[in-house]
Image (tube, rainbow, N blue to C red):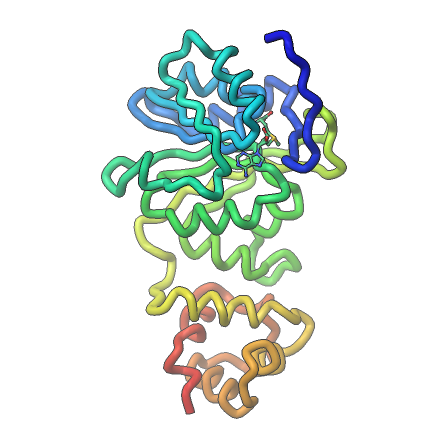
Length: 269
Ligand code: SAM
């Protein structure tokens, strides 16, 4: 197509120009012929061109109207591609998948919306088999972090509670046009059939996890009491019930320990 489009910074438009990496990302999805894949932000189709060869149906959700026209034109002979001109944060995943017919998700994520996209994916985990996502290096390191390291964070806990997450490879800024200021990493998340630890009240659990990490250099006692706005005596009791030493710090607490701690009834005197 003839028209030129200046990449929009506001939409994190850094297009992948490394086809070897594009192929590697798509291969990592292990697509079977009868599987449906949803691509977040297909852009100019760097991943899409490989996806349409491997999947029964590709749903590309792209916010930029001009890029949608570009994609429709570029792939006009591909009947298995549906381009949806929408903000991915406003789509209803239930329109494309069900618990019995789960989908796979792929995307070189627009950096600006990485957090809300991850929340959306976690929210709709029952409809998703797995995701292969390119994110900023630092985010990838938090997603895949191990207990006790500086990257172990509320994001690591929230994501690892529901999925096996693994780092695949790194991409230099020069793999994109225009090159972003940061390095990127590709990660794969495979959702588990059930959460790694049993959670009664997910919202409360996540609130406790966030509060624990909010001031990570403080002890878990001080961090929880100041960030949950609770008397130390209440927090002490909760820590006691979960058999956690109040002097420990959030980064030393395992998922299982957060599971024991993040229970609403623990925090009642
Ligand atoms: N997948 C392409 C590639 O690898 O070259 C483009 C990746 S680029 C980093 C991000 C893409 O997401 C852009 O095409 C941008 O227009 C699109 N985008 C940004 N915000 C979006 C949103 N809220 N919903 C859907 N697409 C969005």
